Image 1 (cartoon, rainbow, N blue to C red):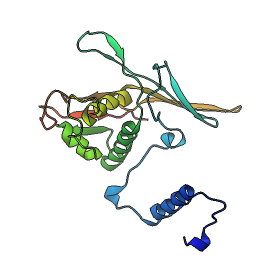
Image 2 (cartoon, helix red, strand yellow):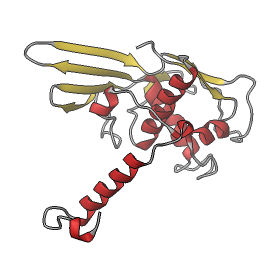
Image 3 (cartoon, one colour):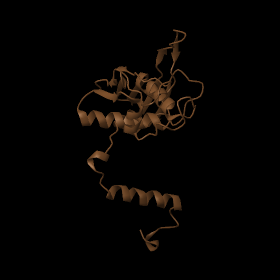
Image 4 (cartoon, helix red, strand yellow):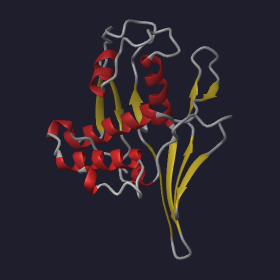
Length: 203
């Protein structure tokens, strides 16, 4: 887009950059290995961008007649042996995980996805730096990834379309079954005897 073609009175510099980036993206067809996929449900309404305050019993987002709602999952605390709320999947990591999950399911044609025998191996597949922050750091990608994986896999996500004529819904868990064998206290390269895996819900 030349300077003469730019309707400067109608667009800000930021809007023009977005338009030009959009044109570049459309003109550059990605290689098959670089393509990523996302479920259409999460295109219409997305997961939380940041952790909701005070962990309400349900979080929701609407887009016209469409609503996405999330109820957090619960797990048994290994130390106290009591149930605890995991909280909501939020931020960039759950979105990155959903891109990987959807793309991998389409690539393999299977609902059972192998995550690998080491955490470093899986983080590399996601494009994350396994060395960032270190295992004990609150900013560690390793710690945040495992936390957000559990939140995403165990949450119940509901999609609902409601109008005066019809009510449609789908309630699901991303991964109703799975095993995570990674130990944060161990080296990220430490291989486990068994591979970590998840099995996606059929829907």
